[in-house]
Length: 242
Ligand code: GTP
Ligand code: MG
Image (cartoon, rainbow, N blue to C red; front, side, top):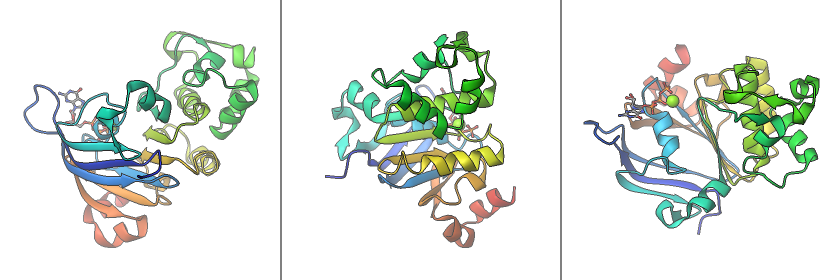
């Protein structure tokens, strides 16, 4: 059986209820623990839809998705949420404190563990500067932190849960290039045994990925490492040039 965390898509297709055309077509890939799988492609290509199928926000219309070798349908909701941390494209914070937001999915985390997660997410600095620090209040919708801070707090929340699978939907694009690079370097250690799937806008975010999937109109049109794709994929070359 594949190790926990392995995400396997087998000929997955998906169409939104009521919509005519499918949004994803015959998607097959395996995201392995200890590896980063990146997904890149133009807006509307289906990247978010693909990620959302993994925690079962929607169910595949055709094909099968397995986690750790077990079909999603056979895993309970609890098991799924315990094993997967997803940072959505529009990250949200709950009204409460920074600490209570970080403990969502990690109820028993110690303060030390929360600070460790914040440090990796490059969020320890601004949290330390806030009055009350972990106890400082987050207003409804997280409007009293900036977009980039909200994104980093949501990454810290994902890390605090210590899952076997991480899903990052465009989570690094609101960060400046340097913070992006520092954050991804810091992620290496805490995610070393997990399967990491990153949707990215910026090519520089994913050049080091073990596997890059190029998604176009719901289909994987090319796959490989950055170097391989530069040689083999026109679509990828266009993305790099844009
Ligand atoms: P960006 O985030 O803009 O880069 O795009 P994406 O690659 O994440 O595409 P996404 O998966 O969001 O959308 C793929 C296609 O599905 C697009 O044609 C969307 O218009 C469509 N779509 C997305 N969400 C919904 C939905 O909730 N209902 C319906 N009917 N269509 C949707
Ligand atoms: Mg998207």
